[in-house]
Length: 337
Image (cartoon, rainbow, N blue to C red; front, top):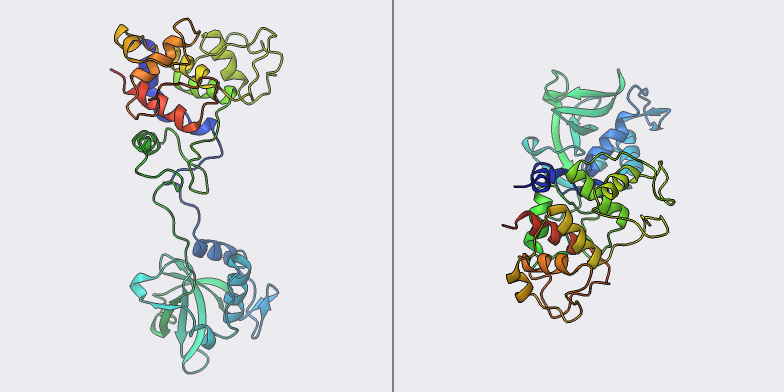
């Protein structure tokens, strides 16, 4: 195995996500609505208890829950603890989730008389007459015996288990799933992969250099890549390695979107892929001639394709490279024998 392939194998998991931001993994979960309510409520810890209070200058128990539900989650609750006890879905004590309303009975009066918000860890965030807004334990000798039940008002959004724009029946599903499972490339915060989004030359340089870990000797070379540019280091390193070069006018054009021809050439050089005679005989695109500058890269990339993405009688090399195509190209290259 040559130097490039060793570097790719060792550093594969650190490549694409950081250069195609803003992205997120399905494994990275945002705070739930319930967690957001509790986090907001904790900002008022220490605010004094005021009977009938509904503002940060002073809260009673139901005034506090009503206020934080409304302001943190845009959820309207009735005014009193007794009324709040009649909303939502009843949940058992063993099934409590952060953000659930927790009710107590027989405090200052008989029946349902107090409410707080479950904060996790057997703790309830609520307005207490002694400490103001505070966390109390459900095992507390005062609160424990007075526990009356809990209601779930928050309806957490359903989180997709897979990208909404990549059907599992797609031929590129395995390639995309393999690399996203390894966190090589992930999706966006709206649970899309955006397979048709384009890849820029600057992003491509950064992607390649996060694999190879090259260090440039000269930082400034291109007139349109100042040292302060976010990918300047990577562009300089990749240029010196001869993987992605610039134009005759000494520009790199980092924000220009990369063509499929460029992608094929870059993948071949970065992974040191060699075109076989068998590949040359089996891959025949009507729009690419043998004397084309990216011919070997195109034929090699197509010959190792395991997804069918590059099948057909045309390569469309002047079309822009997409996230789907770039992902598939890397998947194929890392699995090439």
